[in-house]
Length: 485
Image (cartoon, rainbow, N blue to C red):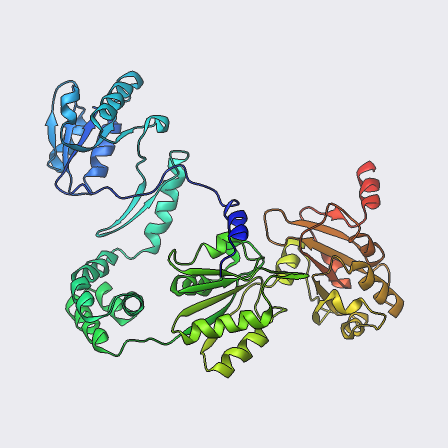
């Protein structure tokens, strides 16, 4: 099930790269570097991390370049560049640090059909050289399309710290096992699950400790075991929207999923964290407009789990708070499909953090209520209103359209009209807005045409301690008065 319109509109929000990242095969092939100074020396050192046949053309090679050429056993031609030097080259680097000369080299390379990189001239480059984390045969390349190379180096430093120096041993072991895996395990899911277990278990631990023989033996025993063909479902909280609020566990299971079933409020950036080959099923649930009925969503999870697939059910916020996870867990349990809940940051916590407001406060508020505003539509006082009267902080989800009803019911019940209120639109997202006021002003929220995103409302005396970095007034009139003052 794929909603192409929804997918297109969501994908349009993602930033697009102007370059396609790829790895050039250069083993044993000629790579040409033209230049004499530090830029040419830096490119020589960079290419020295590969098994390319490096050829340097330099009219007047500097001492640094000469030292790198000798250390890396590169070929040096002490002469002026001419187009004949490009013959047989897989790649070329123009690093003379003279714009006119670099332009001439780039033009000659394009005429010869050789991809060229011009140092510090991204507009002249056919390809950009990334910052590289080398754990051969594993490589991580970080690029900014020439926009901010220093940033790429900073990111590289962080990744260097994350990856074990001996991680290449594990990649090398995997390379040596590929033929055996192809013979012993059927293509598709069985192989993918074997590799996932190998890279995140005792085989990996042995390889990283230097016990390659032991790691290989453990991998062979793993291949001899009965393949794990069971399905599994994770009910995953995607958080309130910011990708860096996604938990590490959620990121991990997204990479394991064969199928990702996601709601409309889950950002495309989070969905994109899954495997590229994972099937994506949009169930498009929004307030007041359920594109796919809940019973059908549960049926999808059961169907895919029984088919032996690993499924991530992505929900905005936390799956156990107004996420209908209870219905989905019941359906999975009844069908005998194993599942796990991966908690997420719920909108109330994100909203309180944005408002810099405590949800509990010693001597003022010792309890917290999660509620929806829907049960305030009628004339009957909702159950949670009594707790608000007793001093609890109340977090009202999906509250914008019923803000007036919530305020009326609580004031009629005796809660002071001056009780502090915060309303957060699009909590933890780039277009987030924080509003402050009191209960008497809350009714104005639904009538504001400038507020149309999901809103979470916080009500309670603890909100008086809020220290927001920036906030608007709930009442436009109050806002104008404040601005005028």
